[in-house]
Length: 412
Image 1 (tube, helix red, strand yellow):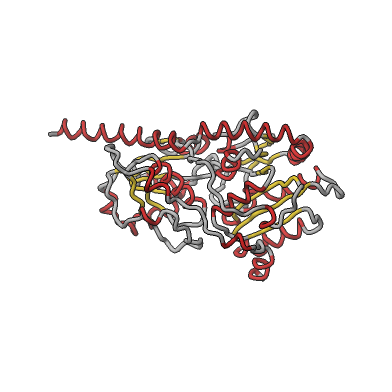
Image 2: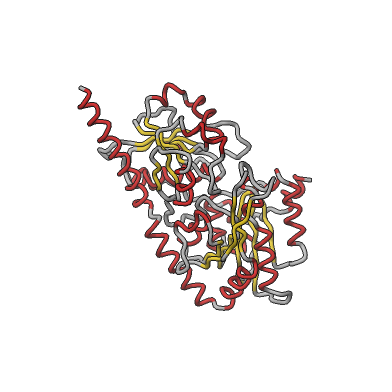
């Protein structure tokens, strides 16, 4: 059943799907790594086709593009994820040449990653763990991992607050860099989207937990906002890894089957294709119950796409009532089975009626939608600029390096 569901809900390929994809080739020529400051090792799932791998590549790209001496170390722990992203292969080595390593492996797999990399090798490093978590409390099972690192880096104040509850070690808050988009040549017709329709996009990975991403609320809000017969509107739900969750994918398909204006597509597509898909839509909707950061929201905003999102958690790092449409919510306890490590945890329940009103407003007042998109684009370009992020990381590395040198002099 899983294979049938997967094959039946993929995008139909057109000729343009086979066009060469844009990549990172400009980095090598435009940003020679001749910086005389300390360099950085980026350690993690560099080839991984999932969120943590994408985040590692984002930070690595920001450093590389700004001329910082950067070495990449790819960790392979045989996780049930694709490993087909080779965009940064030319910078991957099997060494850690710099004194500072930023490790993009969450606590539940950190010990296995250290074993794979080499404990003695990492003991000679200053290790900064870049961790992501979506709730206000850090899992008890994660606390031993804190003792294995020197410092923690997080992408939002929401996550920083959570980790401050369990450690007095330094916590560095550095948002995920969001660069100007690079996308393939795919157009609406290549994704099966009709011209003239105002298209809403909702995207998520089944591995990130359906209950947290909450796409059923988006479907309900769309149905409330646009009764049958309103055919100038559409909703695309783009998911991935649904083949591993056939029961949940089938429930989503059943929830959308009665409305021909709603399309569900489930597959992993190359990043430039996904960015092209985002560009082809008119608004993005995320009625998440919690986000550590919300990268897909920021990616749409930098393209000038207006975003509707829950007024809760890590996305408030870059979203406000002026640059996006924030949906009010109430907090409730996470129920048993809804999310891992969630004992006594709370998250948001966004207002579906408010989301429906917001979707209707953007579709009916398209000049306002464009203005919101432009304000979001301006703010994300300023707040999440790669050069700003690279500078923040290197400021911290420089501070640590000076302290190490001073201690060496004192001990001489």
